[in-house]
Length: 523
Ligand SMILES: Cc1cc2nc3c(=O)[nH]c(=O)nc-3n(C[C@H](O)[C@H](O)[C@H](O)COP(=O)(O)OP(=O)(O)OC[C@H]3O[C@@H](n4cnc5c(N)ncnc54)[C@H](O)[C@@H]3O)c2cc1C
Image 1 (cartoon, helix red, strand yellow):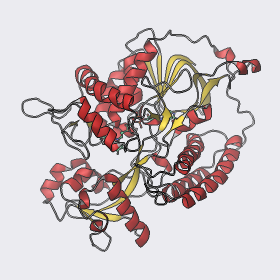
Image 2 (cartoon, rainbow, N blue to C red):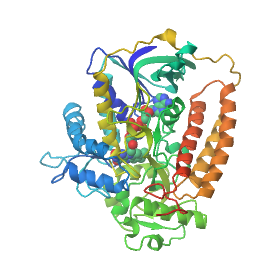
Image 3 (spheres, helix red, strand yellow):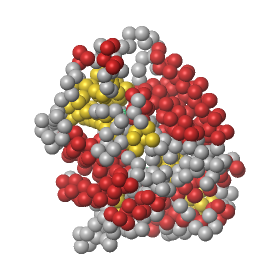
Image 4 (cartoon, protein in one colour):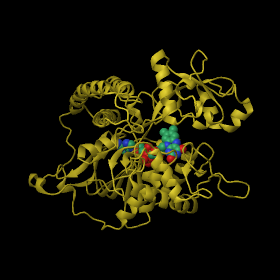
């Protein structure tokens, strides 16, 4: 299959790029998502909102807040681009062009919310379902574009890079370039070569490699692993942001219990009903920064062998107030038979956001020509060592737009054709993918990452993780080389590689900074 631009991922970053590229009617754009429902992605679950330009706010103030949250590691030109261009693009694309129904007051003006570590009220939202509303509007717009093809249930396996995948061995002396991706069509159980002039990775984060995560099943580090195998430069992979409170429920994916619940006065309790936060944050208590609260909960669980702690709003607010203020959280908890208006909520910390990724410039270009990375899979440097709340949707919007504009400024050809690139070879594969093996190996990765490369790290645990992950990787590669493909198998192979990338980065960085908290080498 041939297309002009291949976009791997239909979250906010991929969808914005597709929308912008589609304005050039000469270009054919193909968007992949590994699930049936294109809405399913991290973007769909964003609750809080997206950063806009608040009243008496400025790019300078936003920049200062981002750099402070990033613990001094944010890339200034990238932060400048986000702070200057972000609110303008939000207005131009999300409000004027596609008309996302953001909350407005009686006069019709946007309502700006305040979130932790923001110096101004600048978060715009659609109640507590901002991501779902943005993505529904965006995907509906994309459906109208005749030059955009959305392929559901299609999992990218590996990037096609030249000369690595060249038919002619003498091409090895030529410079590298990305030419698309080998992709698994889950419905037909076959691999297709998708050749493209430019390829954009928009595959999101990697929360699923941790035992507890707020991320849906699409976030397993596929893009990171594919880019790494292709030789792209990866940056800041040790910085994983953990959210303090996610609903404790069966399975690794935890529903996020927003910080606003603590903002409304909810208290943290042990399973015995005792308050514990004062030991860890006597000044701030429940309103301490996200990472401080997350570590406090983690310590309590670890040292007392609790499976979770409780967050109680029912003893603070009246039932009616709770249901009005947190309709989505109330409904979701009820699905697990927890009535938050009369019961405490069992919560655990959970892996939430990947601050590192495929290193890119201001246009989203990676170190491999022809390959772009945008959104959570990329590392623009905006977030440094920790992310300021509600900046990631904006980053996906800005870099999605910039990558599309950069591609539109290039000629719509690359001089390669199907005869230069080999077909996918699978004649030697014998075994059916065993779901039990895939599930157990994935559970082992999650367990290892949670306990050894999680919220609190030390070199002894990291070394242990490196050894265990190396053994597991060799088992998984062995199994992968002999087994017929499935989406789960592709995810497992990427999951182990993403885990190794994070662990090696954590091992090499002895400085405790931001989301990389080392108990053995604190500064
Ligand atoms: C619960 C929750 C709440 C959040 N709240 C906020 C908030 O309020 N504000 C904010 O700014 N940020 C928030 N975030 C973070 C933000 O949602 C994400 O960082 C952002 O949406 C990432 O967008 P993306 O386009 O990069 O990736 P995603 O939205 O995750 O999209 C990834 C896409 O890639 C596809 N994909 C992955 N691998 C493959 C493959 N191998 N082949 C084909 N397709 C593939 C997936 O199917 C999906 O379509 C929140 C995150 C979560 C989980």
